[in-house]
Length: 575
Image (tube, rainbow, N blue to C red; front, side, top):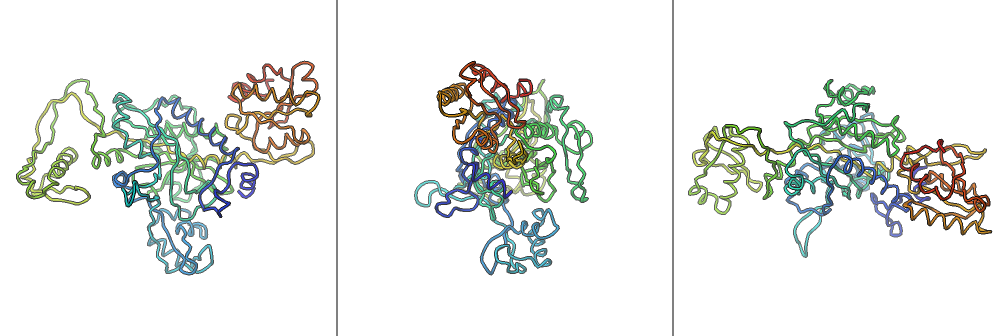
């Protein structure tokens, strides 16, 4: 990691932001090479999960009003464990302190009281100053950045910790764009913010980061995906049971095998695990250092019934790159309870059906004097409860929640009844399957997995073996020397290649070997040299980064050749 961080700073992949003012932990600037690499990684994600899957893409605001997070549960359940040193005052993630200094690997799944006991039992010390942490309280710390919308005290809001809520809150409009037909997906690539207690490992745990998320809305009783499209993908699975048994053996199963053996419980989850694995391989993650790890019960997010993390290994640590979660109907149901819109889809029956429907006809002459201005909200809450759980009306009283407060209504005043009605269809709350990717973490892992050292002509070289599709620059163009018209010809060639839509760098500084090494180190897959033979016959030397092999190519054909190499339609050996 230290070698990679040094390369990142020196060659312009990423570095700490605002260093001229001392910098703040957890914020990074992508330099020219890193911004291009990140953009290319995002484009491959968009190609796979938006274009090829036929999903829609949106771009929602990063500032979100507080009621959205009240509904989603983030105000109460989006926390990490914090312990503060009494000696130096530094704050640390308590579960990380435990995991870094003991053999315990899953401290984040423990309650705060147990983590306090572990700290005391092992006499753990502050990572900053070495003072003992035993006896210090471990508290829940909400990770969201709070802000104020508007002048003065304004309206409370938060920087979004995920892009997902933008897609959930806009569901009533998105379903119209999808013509009310399930399944459909909404995707988003954008910034997220989490006020991490102890940012670390550069892009791995930052306070501002880029996420690529897909919310896929499905009919819980509808048909699943066409698994024949991913039948040849073998998934490296690390189920919860194997983790709890301290096993290190992974199961290598196809999506269908994983479902048939009960390892993965949801067809859509299995499908997106397969699509995700293929994408990670496409952008350069080493499949020998890659796995899908199932969340243990104690680490599941408040909205998830199951989740599998795509993880990549770097220097012995497993980095979470993506979570594929089954969010069931949690999100849309919560927003349906809190918002003034409809978060359901009407499902048409093949033939009309006679069904029993629970209804309420509240006695407003009772609700009005009893609840005043909240009477209408109470009536709406009773109607929603009747549709959701008719057994709640079995007793003498019914309790509903209005604006966070519980109120009780005598059952006889609710006008509750069950009637037979003929329906042509019904409103359902879609379930959601969510593949959520950390773009920065993917970039970091791709760099780590492709950074290599080898020997060329007796000299050691550092080389970044990035896939051509995501490399920041596709081709470097060099004149053998900048004289006798070689420089002008090379500059014209570089301009032509840029016009052809290729990412090009021009370099005439130093000897040709040194120029090759510079491009090898930043991952440029191909280099072109204009020499005296070029002036005679119009051919140039094309060099491959990984093999260092060279071939002569007609300069007029060079743009088409490079595009076919970049896009994987042709191999360099074929030339």
